[in-house]
Length: 89
Image (cartoon, rainbow, N blue to C red; front, side, top):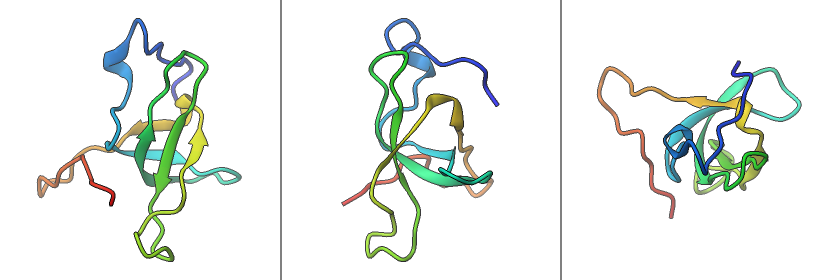
């Protein structure tokens, strides 16, 4: 797990852009689940707003929730070359 947070002002390249597929620690669990970035941190102490995949919702995603930066990690592309960006309607 990363120990530090990225500062969006001085390290914008370290922030996952909106629409990026990531893995994030789901609240009250010890598991990382796939999610889509809804809102990015603006300041160093801000959290990401993420849509977690959830097939019980018609759109396939649960409502957005806030997750601390240190619990959001890169979701690498699969060998099939699928896109890292997903579009939400």
